[in-house]
Length: 191
Picture 1 (spheres, rainbow, N blue to C red):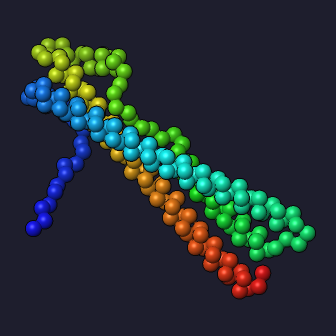
Picture 2: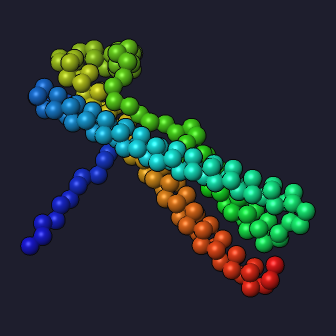
Picture 3: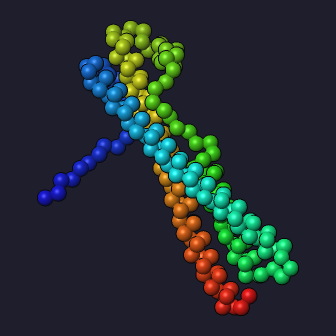
């Protein structure tokens, strides 16, 4: 019999619950939250590395296609078949490169584990501490809140980057298959 595993969904951390927790539980939450943030950072870096590698291959392909297009166009008798198919694939490569750069590489935000100490001693955090018995619990609760927010924002970023990367791969497959179909069609038409 297969056991059903249910995961709780992410939601913002309610800082008020720290009053009912002991310090060991709060420290455990901080440790696990920071471990998860480090995992997310590594995973986002891996996705970015894959996007950069794909981008490198696309730029190399565009350089080769541009050279072939220029060489064919500059020849005494330019081959229409080569001009059309090369231009078609160059357009696809440029479009995919644009999607990767604008969608997954440019202005992407990653929320890292940790923060500057001054961040946690600003007025927004210190004012509510007046009259609070255990200030350490409250500050660690604020850390938990910040970690949870960063995890949720990183998940959105990760989902977006993976979506763009998969779109780029799908478009590459479409470009290859449609380029082959175009080549066959043009050959059959006798161009």
